[in-house]
Image (cartoon, rainbow, N blue to C red; front, side, top):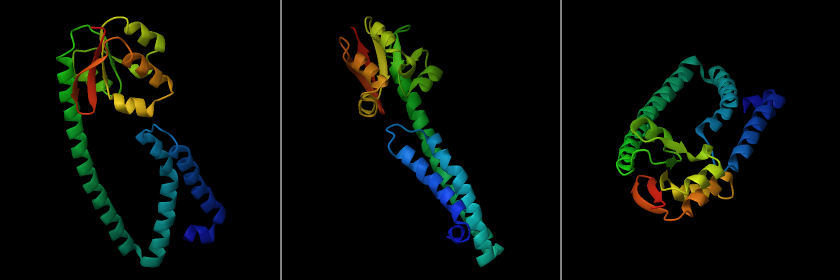
Length: 192
C-alpha cells in the first residue's frame, strides 16, 4: 500500500512481475516446486518495503515480535512438513523393495517418478521413461519387461505429449498387465 502511494512505477514493476509469473505457471499441466522460486525476489522486496513501513508506523519492538512470531510459525510448519516427507520417503522405499522382489534380475524396468528410489534402494537397474526415445521403448516391448508407473497420473498429465506416447506404447504392448500396486505406483509386466 505504501509502495503504491510513494513510487508507482516500482509497485507496477513488482506487481507485474508476480502477475506475469502467475500467468505463465497457471496453465502448465506439470509443475515443479522450483518454479515457485520466481516469486521469491518480488516477495522479498515487498516484505522489505512493508517491514520499513511497519517499523515507522508501529515501532521496532512490535515489528520484532511479529518477525519472531512468523519465524516460530514457520519452524512449526517445517517440522510438520519434514515428518510427512520422511513418512512418504519410507513408504516409497517399502514399495521399491516390494517391486524388486517380483522382478527377475536383469529384466528391463521402465520407471517414471520412482526411478531414484528404485535405483538407490534396490538391485534393479531402472530406465527413466522420460529420457527414453519412442524407438527404444518400442524395441523394449518386443521382449518381456516391467514398468513401475502411476499410469492414471501419466495418462492424465502427459496426454498428447511425447511422454504420453511412450506410456501408450507400453500400455498397448502384448500382455501388459498389472502385477501389484503399492502406494501411488503399480508394477506392470508385458510380453509374458
